[in-house]
Structure formats: structure tokens, C-alpha cells
Image (cartoon, rainbow, N blue to C red; front, side, top):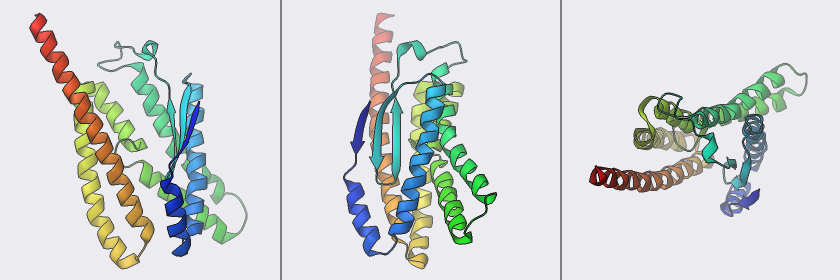
Length: 220
């Protein structure tokens, strides 16, 4: 299993330190790691093998190895692998929800409890956004894959990701103006990087499908 650190994380550490928000960033990263452990546990229970762990500016990411034996076209128009991916994606937000429930039922410092609850709510809300490759985007893409097929799932999830990010950017612009919170600004930048990268991948896959269809038509 490979391990990778995105060097942009150190830039954010410096920025959050000088804006006196380092404690918020540290809390987010700690619970983001626990969030990712939820993904890892779900994947292992489903028989999936971890391939790579990445530390990113706004959390951690675990990817799993994919093998052809995982595919099963008998599950409607999709496969068992898509169902596994959806379960793994859902495991992260569920982990944060469990942490919130535990925090509410454990005696302790009220301020620390509120920080734990606040941080995990942020992680849940951020990750359930219908933006691929966030958890919400992965679940949406899996549902579209099962209902409409792989090609349309890639196209529609990419479009929905763009629309959602545009709406969030407009809302975030107002929030940044009134709250003067630098974390919101960097979160939006991070989302745009994810969306643009994913769109490039989607466009490449679209061209591959079109070429495959042309070859198929020629053979017929």
C-alpha cells in the first residue's frame, strides 16, 4: 500500500496559524482521519484491498484496488462493485455521526464537546455534498450507474458536481464577506480543484466510450 502527502497542506498550516484558526484546522484533520478509518474498515469488511492513502489539504483519502472479478453485470445495469463503493462512501459520514452520538452521551468539558460536535457536523455536511469524488458524489454516481449505466453516470455526476460547486461558491462568497473566515475560501478553492480534475477525467472517459462505440458500429 502506497502513502502520499500533498505538500499544499503545509501552506494551509502556515495560513491557519497566522489567522489564529489552527485549532479548528487541527480538529478537522483529526476527525477527518477517523472518518477515513470508517471507509477503510468498511472496505476491509467487504473484502476490498487498500491501495493508497493520501493526506490532502482538507482531509485524508483511501483508495482501494479494483479487480475484474468484482464486476457483476447481473445487478441491473451496474455491478456489485458499485454497491460496495456506495457502502464504503457512506461509512465515512456514519463514522462522524457515531462520534457525535458518543460525544453527546459522554460527560466532559462542554466547550470540548461542542468542538467535537461542530467539527463532525462540518465533515458530514462537506462530505455528503453531491460533488464527485466526495462521499455524496460517489453515492450519487453509484445510484446513477445502477439506474442509467456507467456512461450516463459519469456525464450526469460531472454536471451535478459543477452546478453544486457554482451554487456553493455564491453562498460562500456571502459567508466570507460577513464571517471573514479564511477556511471557507480555501474549502471552495479545494472543491473547484476536485471538480475540474474530475471533469477532465470524465471528458477523457467520454471520448473513450465514443471511440468504442464507433469501433462497434464499424464491426457491425
